[in-house]
Length: 296
Image 1 (spheres, rainbow, N blue to C red):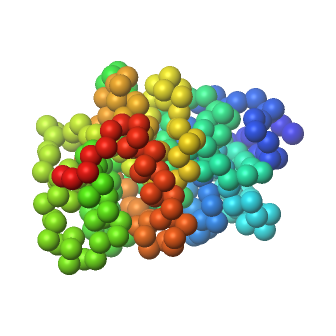
Image 2 (image 1 turned 90 degrees about the vertical axis):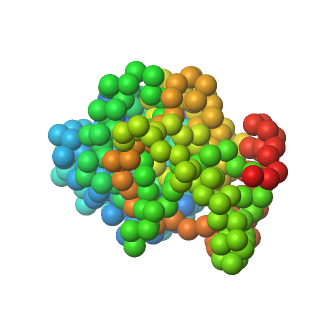
C-alpha cells in the first residue's frame, strides 16, 4: 500500500484501531464520518468543498472519510464515489472502514489519527459549504492567534436560518426543541430564541458563542489535541457542545457571519427511538460534567 495518495486518489485502509500508513501532513485537513449517509449528500458536500478550495487556491488538502456503516456494500459504493475524484488536485483522500461504530466523536478522532494539520474542518456529509468558506476561515485563524474554534452560520435547503450556534442549554429548552409540538414551541418562543442566541449580535462578522454545532466546525489542531479531542463517551449528540466548552478553556470560540453552510440534517425525535436514546444519554453526560440547568 502506498504511503500517500496522489492528490485526489483515495487510499482505502482496512479495519483497525490505528493505521500503519504514515500520516498525511497538510495545513488544512477535513474529516467526515459516515453511517449509511445518503451518497447524494456526500457528493454534494465534496463538490462544495472542492469549489471552496479552488476559490481559496488550495490543493492537496487532506480529506479523511471514516465509514461506520459496517456494511461492505455501502463501503464499496463510497469507494466508487470517491474514485470519481481521482483526477482532482484539491484533495488527498483516505477512506477508512472500522470494525465497530464507536460514535460520531470517535470517528473524527480516528480520522485525525490519520493526519497532521494546523487547522481542521470537521464536517457532516449532509452539509454544503459556501465557496468563500475555506478562504475566510483560514484568514480568521491566521489573523487571530487566540481563535480555537470557528463556527459558520447555517441555513436549511430552503434558505431558512438554522441557528447552529447555541447558548448553554437547559433541560426545559432541549425538551422543547426535541419533543414539543409546534404550538408549545410558539408559546415558548423567547426561551428558544435565547438558546439559539438570536438576541446576541457581534461587532462585525465575528461574535463569541458558547456552543458550536459539530455538523461544521473549524478547529485549531493543537488546541483540539491539547483537550484530548472528542470525548468518546458520547455516542451521538452533545459531543460537539462538550468539545466547544473544552476548547473555550484554551482560546476563543467564535461564529463568523460570512461563513455560510447549508445543512440537510433533521431533529433527533424525528429519526426514531434509537436517536432519542442517544440524545437523552448525551444530554445526561453533558449536564453531569458541566452543570445541570433545568429552566431558562
